Image 1 (cartoon, rainbow, N blue to C red):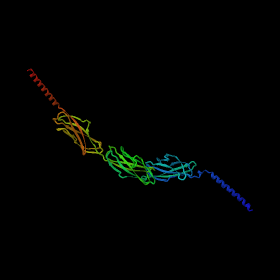
Image 2: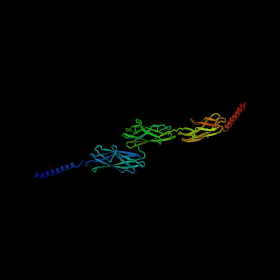
Image 3: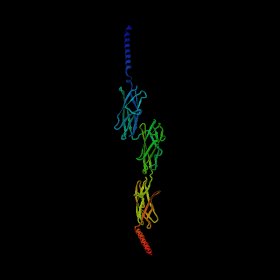
Image 4: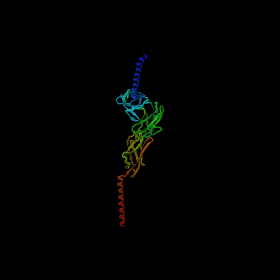
Length: 393
């Protein structure tokens, strides 16, 4: 009787074992990726940026086994752009990895006219088997953001002459927790030449700075020789590999210098006139420098007995690039003999001076010429009469 009761129980256990074994066998045949978990993550899901900046985020794609995962960015505000990069290329998919995961960079360009506020963005990863993972990001646009870049200059304002180089020492500090590579973008007024490079390597365009460390950058700005006196801004932008940006404005104070020039209005250095007769010679006084000229006085040196004056005798002021016309009034001596004479016209303003040498050709008097001819003719007639009279003897 006991054996009869146990037999059905044994058969039931055997059947149950068969079901378990079959189920195990069926589970073994199921593809492994069906149990895999696809995860897309980023270490910084919420970041701050300022309008006009570029934001760079690192993405990690993890799965139990390597899978090709398509990546898609959605929810971008109007005017914003996003680019996925990996291995130096623009990418649209990535092969996931277990444990440490595969990494890609997401670059987001924030337009300069973006209003302050929070902007949500989504990144979705999907594999061929239908596995899907979505991560939400938030870009907080603020007017002022601590970018992790500190810029300082020992002497942010320098002064010098036109055409001379203004050299600044700029200290760049990496306040981020990782090593960063920085690039430089200096700008100056039109016509200026400006460069920026690390002090240790004059030809380099970038510099790598460890976390919490700093480096020195030389910024050189050279104005044109024609730069007018005044203050000019030199803007330097430093951009980190993570998209962070820092700016500093340096000042170049150009101390203009005036230059005095004097010449004739027609560029000719030959003048002609008559004795005891005034001759007006148009002259040009010019300021060819970069600072104003004041109280320009005129004077002249001529042969003894000659008179030289100027109208006007003084030019009150000349701005850079400005000219003024004056007249040198020359009156040769009444007894001056016809011929060529040298005279000098000078302009002076403080320690500055400029001079021009003129050759003055004095023409003989027509009346004196006629008298001379008459005297010669009379002498010739008288001499002829003497020869005739004494010749007959």
